Length: 281
Image 1 (tube, helix red, strand yellow):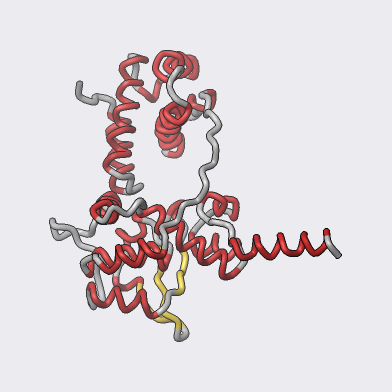
Image 2 (cartoon, rainbow, N blue to C red):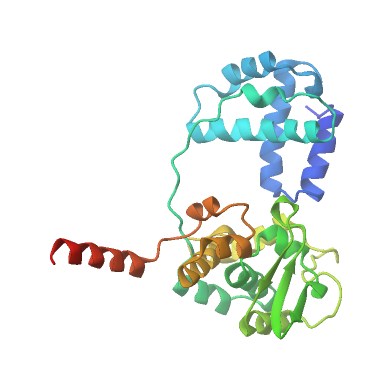
């Protein structure tokens, strides 16, 4: 059945072109919202909390906690969009239940796998991998990068991340290795760093797909997300400063680091040695 809700069409267009959601996320979100539209039988902007709670009982209850949370997140994101654009005055999704999920341990890509992935990549893919693993860029930020965003400031090479997640900008200092890999990919002064087959600036979901497909072909159990986790872990462990890691990774708070950064095993060992020394003076 074709989508007839114009608010939903506008939202999907915005989510693809501006928000940069992946094709898979958009496909799932569209399916969830389209089913909601069929259940309530009214334009989505006119849905009230009671109708959403009824949808939750009919379509969401009984599913796995992760699935229930995903359904609620998809619907909530849509209504936040309508609220932000003043299409509605109140968010009817606030009454929906978000199941608590256990926090998975961070699993950054291993150094051995990262070296293999970069060594087996084309110059273009290698540049994507290095920007994620050595500069902490998200797929959205890699896709949006222009050659003007790579420059030297006070003798230090930097990558300017513009309109990152949460529309936050940041400057990421990088080493010579990142610049070297980028130069192997291209040496232009202007324009998008990554161009798709259509000759246009690459979309975020394309960057994600290229990276993940490359890792999958090499049987490396990692994703683009885990490349960023590797960067955040290295920054946090080497600097011992979660505030710095949050700034360079573009996290809103240091709390986010818990989902990315592995604890420094050497520091854990030092702590245990100190405790043992106190126990055995």
